[in-house]
Image (cartoon, rainbow, N blue to C red; front, side, top):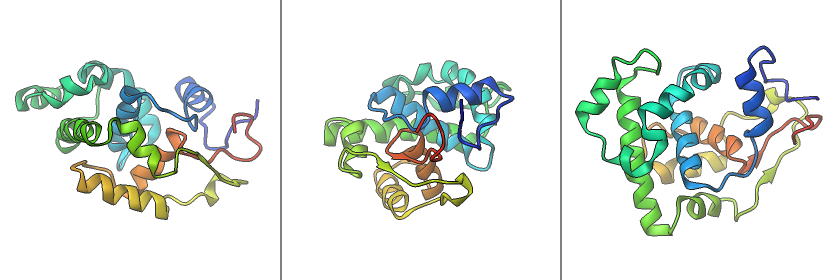
Length: 183
């Protein structure tokens, strides 16, 4: 099977992530929330680091139950700073709670985060002509627009690069390389 050239073939988590998740249109609320959180954790780090800590993050954040995360106390978040199984960045951990709260606000206003986020692409994934992933921009006009909207709504760590990664991962844009069997 031919995969995108960015996939680290030595890491089974990377392979599974690419083959089973990345670029597939995602609509389930909890999964969208988890993926958005994962992209915020990546800021300044490698995606492999985040993938390797994914299960521990799930356990720490109630398997991304949005209501439970939104109601986490400062003491609960501070206790996570002692957990070496996750990325122990105070601002990112606190951003997870803030993002859960903002996510719930978006759901109240728009009915679902899914309908809100997919409205930016009129419900249809953009499919790009990618011959080499090095040609794919780290941010786009779309990711800049969504980043501004998310920040205005109270989200944290959602710069245009993180949003672009989220859009690719959640299948709002398809940036699989043209010769990838998973395009």
